[in-house]
Length: 223
Image (cartoon, rainbow, N blue to C red; front, side):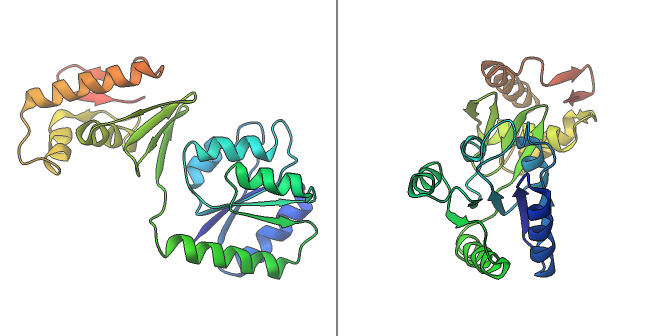
């Protein structure tokens, strides 16, 4: 079942969209914090976004640009600012379609269905893990933080993914070794130490100092 994130500050419009697309079997969520949309986007992990241009704090172009740093999820602009300049700008910023307000809800649903079909018939869904502003992109083995991005090796990614999936809990060294064995024939204990050290240096290079903590004699934790 596809999830759709609605970034629309007009509560009446947002509720009518949410009700209509829910009736068609989609899972809909309205953004509540317009000052910082990214955490809600990452947590909900939608397969499509409906995005207004005129929003509190930052406009839709800003949020389209921020989302595009993390994901290729389809973005459909919905706006009454439907002059040619805004439509062109929306497409240039990374939008996939533009629907002018006021619109027929049946037309909106048809557009959503068409975009989802052509997007997910040919590609997999985007998966992200987020913690305190750091975002691990499972599709390209990268981590982003404060507009900085660094690519990880296969082992570094596996370690970080495991720790993020268990954030707040200490992951013992044996469990991390097992995760690495899934991608390598054999991993010595020293290999884990080397990979954690390299991973920490990469995290520090984008401002994530002390992101991974050591629990002496046990393993590692992201708190």
